[in-house]
Structure formats: C-alpha cells, structure tokens
Image (cartoon, rainbow, N blue to C red; front, side):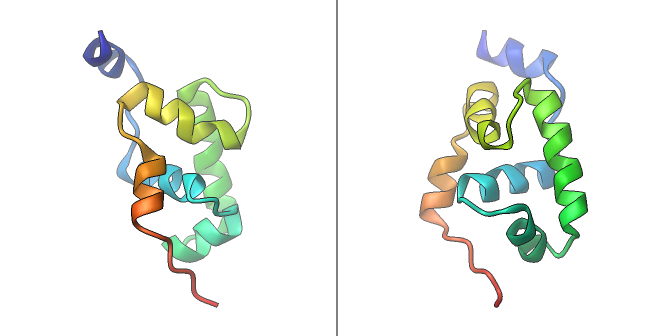
Length: 87
C-alpha cells in the first residue's frame, strides 16, 4: 500500500527534499535560501509546489506530510545533521 501511494503521488525532487529537511530543522525561507545558495523567492516557489504536491495548506505541515508520503523522516535528518548557517 505504501509503495502504491508513492508510485501514484507526484515525485519530490532532490532539491525539494533538501528544502523539506531544512524546514524540518526549523529554517526560515531566508535561511534555506542562504544554505542552498538560491533566492528566498525560489524557496517560496518550492514551498508552494511542495504544499500542492503534499496536499497541505501551511508550510509548517510540509515535513509531516513528506514523512507520511515517503516514510523518510526529515525530522531525524534535521536532528542528526544540524544545519550550519553562514552569518
């Protein structure tokens, strides 16, 4: 059943997965942008796409929805690999 859900759901790109993990780590769009070397506007566009793909209304719901969809826990990754921010 879980594999069927993944096969019929829109694919999450590697960049979107990175953004999910940074959101799970508590990063703002500006912090995500700085960490990935992209603009905050691009991060927002990725978040909008992720919200549509994952069927959630709020940015903060993205990591939990990602976990339900893929079974991969972005919270564990965030906890085990703290995000170094420049600044």
